[in-house]
Length: 91
Image (cartoon, rainbow, N blue to C red):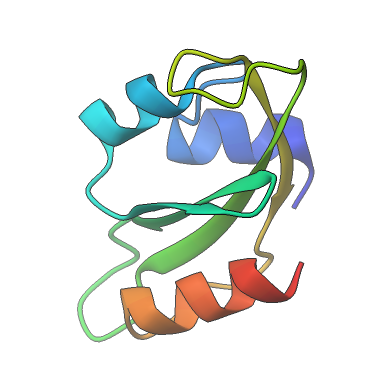
């Protein structure tokens, strides 16, 4: 999935701030110089519905108000948020 497709499908903001992500999504993790997200998107009954996303800092401001941009989004959905976050950590 391309960045533009992911932004439209999952309604991911780009660019944004870590603070904004934490207000909109429940599973956000600062991981080194990246900000990881495990999001939920209903794909149908009994189907995997979690996705992973990776943001990177676009400036030197590493605070919650620094600007971040979407770098990668998983091509598949996962069974739970833990697997989605594990995917994001490997990116």
